[in-house]
Image (cartoon, rainbow, N blue to C red):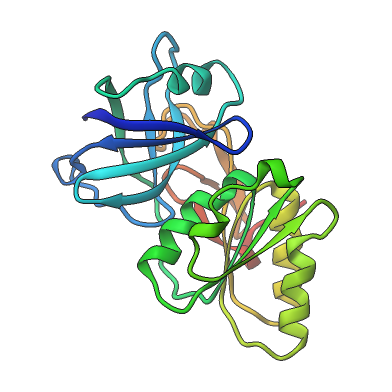
Length: 233
């Protein structure tokens, strides 16, 4: 499907906040927190998967870090430019959650969830204050910097007796740590895995990940999985 860039801005350190006008209904797959788009970058063969940070009134919000050729090309798009994308793809956050744990560029899909569900609290982790993004847009959030790890903050809340369901998105070490904390306190936890993708629709198996004793496709079967079923080894 075709979309058109409505606006684009740089936020944080090397992070792009882009709004794209697109009609997901025409593609037959509605937008929802945890889903992603597979977007074509100018001059780059393979598409790039970008999590949805929001979707309202026909406009998708995409917040992504510039990490390579593809995202660098996307960062050069200007207002009015046409973009080709597939979406919304994958299975999003289907469980009702109260605590959202994210690290760095893992915050965008959690912000989408927080803005469409009431009574959530976010624990957001960043390497330093220069890399802080989006935290001020959550209805309720606390920010962790450097060695002040989000999973430690989460454990303090659960150890104090707080009952919760947790959603998490971010780097693999953070997700593994969050899953471990939730397992110790018998707390439901669902994670959005970050895997390299090629086709985005489940055909190429590049994004296969071990879940529930089987290899599943992150793009088609996920990217959201029950943390207790993920093989964290």
